[in-house]
Image (cartoon, rainbow, N blue to C red; front, side, top):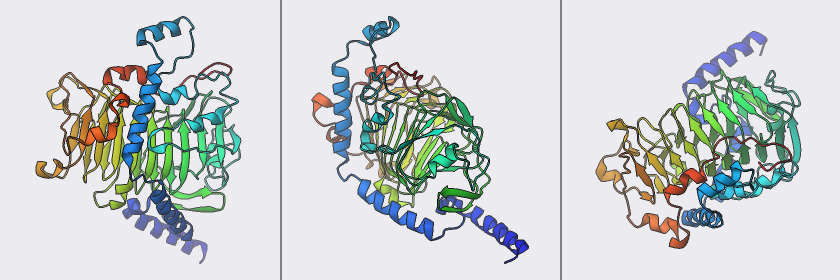
Length: 440
């Protein structure tokens, strides 16, 4: 094929692919490489799925209870901190690593700290340290060594850190390979004003400590997605982080706002996911878990939302879910305009020990919203609230088995902490300021 014919072919491919991008996750050319990755991803979903989710929810509740048993009152801890007192992380994830003054030398200790459905996710542990020194993103086919794009496409496990503060403006979506940790501790790193991060048909990824904001759709084109493969991509959606057929993913201590589409989307059989210690602000459609009511593969989706702060300027979808099992535990919902938790296609939602503070407007009082189903249908869905604190007229419309929440909380001695503890558990949500040689 001559050059003119090749250009015409690519144009036709682009026009066709633009019609149905969501069916293949913006993969413009579904070649043998992507077919193999999809097959492996389906196997990963089956392996990561836990047929007994109550074991996971009970374990989370046990860890939270144990972490607070040794703490005194919030007031005493705040006094100690003001006086330069001891390190005082107040939830089990942070207690796992933040008091280590040598956290910079012991970065990979973080990989032992995931809880919830992503428990056991180790990212790039046991791999070498890769230092990002260059914030540029100029070459999508042959990324420059030292850039974030060059780091995430490597085959081997990597623990990716940053040499200094930087703003990374991605020209197109950043397509990650598996067994990677992006660790921004010790540097003020923003992924902003460009495309977002895509975790597609891979497993074992940790992203920690990034600011992600002002993400816009990419135009698509030829993009390298691994050391030995590149291919044509259609226009991306403008999500901050997009999980597509991804498993064993832990997103921790992120600050996210103002992305064109969602802040975090998890679709197409993604599972074994924990989103923790994050701060979300100034956004409309915050999280989408399951993109289509016909995508039955999302029955295996299992996600833990824990210790997050849903803050100012949020409208809806915290999350909006389909099919899967969502454990929403010890989060602080201080703002929503339409609703906090929505869904369709009978997902299970177990809400434990969260604080929901409604706005003054009468239309913004309900926490929950069901779509595309009359009450006689959705009343069978297990949406349960246990130990939640509902303030300023907020109300959670429960449905399903009244005994469901007791099944998932386990022994009453280790049930989810009451919501009045939420401000303590979430007080350090979002990115942290970590200084070398000091507890973080």
